[in-house]
Image 1 (cartoon, rainbow, N blue to C red):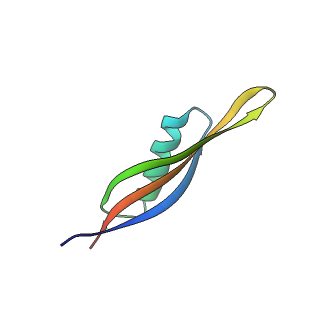
Image 2 (cartoon, rainbow, N blue to C red):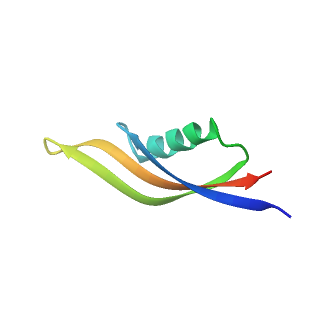
Length: 66
């Protein structure tokens, strides 16, 4: 029987949502093994001078516990 655990990660990027998701998963994978998937719970942008300056995502990352 497998046991899964979910952690929540907030990640940001200056280039877009896809990069924010990718960097969040990559950073989590540095310390968490057996990542099985991720769910984007929420998205947000930061605006500066009328333009998007940062994209942010909240990720729920699922991994299998050994």
